[in-house]
Image 1 (cartoon, helix red, strand yellow):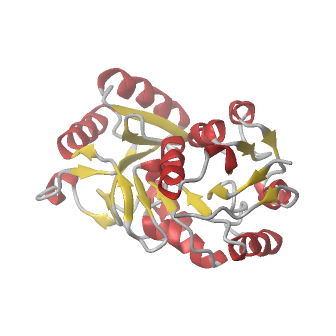
Image 2 (spheres, helix red, strand yellow; image 1 turned 180 degrees about the vertical axis):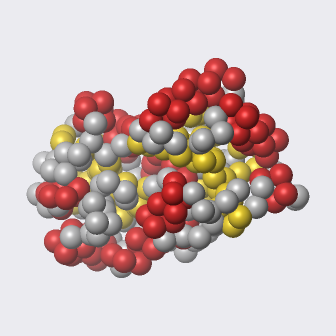
Length: 273
């Protein structure tokens, strides 16, 4: 009988339902697993405070992955790993986007700092509502003094603009990756950094085999994690490409998909050094 020792969970569209809530059954199950010393690892494109907000909501205390893998923190908030985009590259990308795609809103993230040029746009207000975080209004160049890297850039725009921007960025900035998290969101992150590479780092740190990991996700950014985990489970609300990358498909995030996916799996505590 196959058993698992660690759980990796995407947040938005996976753990959270469409009302940004976690079902009572799911919360109880995750607490039972944590009490059995099964680490629950939250994995997100969110900032540290945005991830910790959800960890506090469901009262779990595992390590967590931020910015899609660019920043990995232990349960005590110590940095396990980080990889950034050089500030010169980030500034050049942002300048090119503002010139060629003026309707696309670009935000910059470093640790728990969220920089935006303005916060009155509908796109930024929606992101504030989702993450319950407030950006610092400042041009990137003005805030760059003494900073040598950022963890990610987030571009928000219409699906057509985002698709064109992705093609442009991939061609002219090959040193970073342009990854769709949803049709209107484009994440710009360091090359070869994703939730799959973050999963490997955490497994190596805790000396847990990847085969002992179960992971749940719903978006294109979850594909590396679902493909790499011993058991990758796609949500019912995932796109077909995401479902094909997984070992199983569960119910949607509005139908307690995480609870259904995990409740009948077998978990065994592995002594973590």
